[in-house]
Image (cartoon, rainbow, N blue to C red; front, side):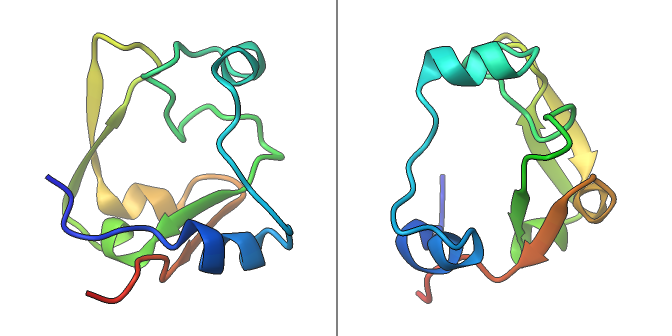
Length: 96
């Protein structure tokens, strides 16, 4: 269960210097990655895609993320996100 919300329309929009943002349509996301919809993971994304990670996630001991396949997940160390290419760790969540 989620305990916070990402500030998509504020922090992330400003970070990407975009007037408006939205998630990629399913068919485009699947075509641009070697992954299945519902299993897309930050590991293996195209290197020019920015990956924005909330500091709370990066500072968590273990995180469950997609594996590229819908039927499986990966358990990774939170500090992995500091090592992925084109990743920025920042405060993204809205205050509670």
